[in-house]
Length: 202
Image 1: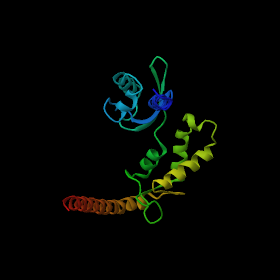
Image 2 (image 1 turned 90 degrees about the vertical axis):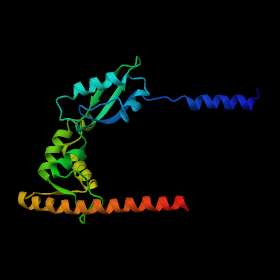
Image 3 (image 1 turned 180 degrees about the horizontal axis):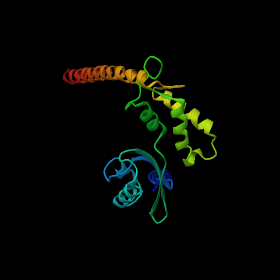
């Protein structure tokens, strides 16, 4: 075997050897960890017992409302046992819950706000999120600013105060806008499928 061939073979071995970090970070819905995709294959490649993991995670999150997304860190020990750590739901979840909207905005900004939250909402969310490990030693003011920034990203406006009746009217009008946007998206998808079908027949 030539020197070049031996080098290529050596490089191939290096490429094939994948070194995984001793942890996995993912989002898992509370009480709904299942062995199937996407979770099963994601952690199964680390030789973790997927069925045991799902049972353990669901047991640990049984007192949390089912389906709430939980940012989760799975620390993998040398013997392939694991330790589960999960944080409070992401900021975007709390923001949309407080705003009363299921989806964010397609074009975040004054022309298409998906909802609104008050500064009081921001403060209450900040108190919850500040309990997360990632916010250790972070001043509450900075956590509040991060929540305001995240709210804007998903299309939720932060205001000083919300008037209940006025906001109810806003949400009703917003429903009509979302329905119209959904119809437009469906039409665009159908048009795209037709164009692809025509291109295949040509």
